[in-house]
Length: 268
Length: 305
Image: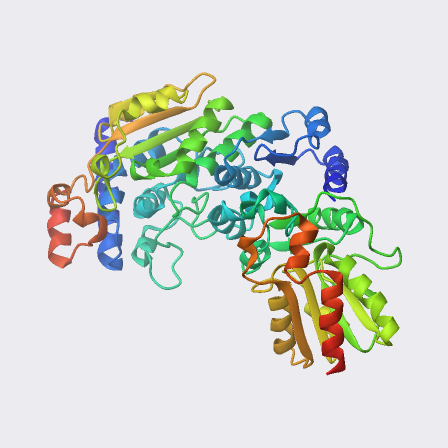
């Protein structure tokens, strides 16, 4: 797809993210914004999924393991037509089908429940393993956060997926360098991050997670007899200048009326 | 029980290619034949119980029927959040098989005790908690739970024992009433049935006739069947090799109150002194008041009140 189209879609995704967080007053707007470009390329340039048949057996499976960024997933699913965009206004409201972390059975197009970090990857592995066993060609893509790489299950899973040569599995790490209480690297040293994954037997590449061309290119090159990880360097709050400048605050805070309108202006 | 379980699972796996067996690197000398007969359907996940439970959830999401095996604390406590979020909340067809009920691995020390597992799993939605008394129940309940899609926990012991009389049926969710008496009812779970039966036998010498019930299913229970089995009894005794808090004792207390059945309840199980003693299963059980003689005395005392 053309760069200009991706740009247009991702702007709309960001508007939808802001709307959800503005109306709901719930946290995690910065985390959703940081993966908006990755989701745009995934859903409009890579994943074989169709809103006409959300449960089609041959569909690619996408797992948002960083479940707290779910406003981004809802935005992209609405954009793809899995449900009416109007529904985004119900995000986190009583009786809504859009809870604050992805939940199976609530939202069309959402594959699994996530929210406890470190669950999405091993569940994705189970799905990829089943596909291998049954000789099915679908791919499994898991989007994780860098903070999630503190979890033991992430590295257990890294061992398992490499051992079982799951080349139908892709992990994308939304590496925005921020986690709960501050800079990831200061809280728990990740580096050398790329080398860690390589040492675990993964095909590992690092890209700019806001560069559509780089995301697209990284997605087209699968691993052979090994899983692959794409470390996507991103900015928390990407696209909204005042959020980019104060990423920790925007892990928790939600925009007030004035901030919401000023943010929307940046997306024109 | 363990051999019965794997034999039963092997039979099922011959008919159903979706069945898989995952282990957390345990089961030496038990799974070799299964692994040989069903290559690719036996996976040793290594020592990573948390991921293993999530992987099982992922397999179940794709229509597989995974059985996940480990020693009870590693199969249920280490991966508790995975069981809750990934398996029970998503209502997936994953069967968790834990071996070493109660103090079975007692001599290994307290890390291997399996005496709080029922308490932590019972409140979870969708899961059927099963604690068979013997090999007959193990076979029956493995078969019946296979036919009931959804999460399930099988709490097993290694030894093969037969306690169930041929005429008594084992039905998932329903209590198995082994014998009837009007002076009170003993309700057991797991292999404590043996103690329950022995105590009831001896009690006849004191002209006391007790009902003996094996409650092998501890969640998703058929409540009317349980009420019917204990209604009208003035004395109820529960015996379990498990903490009474949250276990069988709690379960019966809840049912007695909920259905206003009356009767006096005595819960016999493990108190909170268990970390401080070393010993084999029988010794530890006796030290915690679960020996036959101790239970006999306690029950007789209650009956004479």
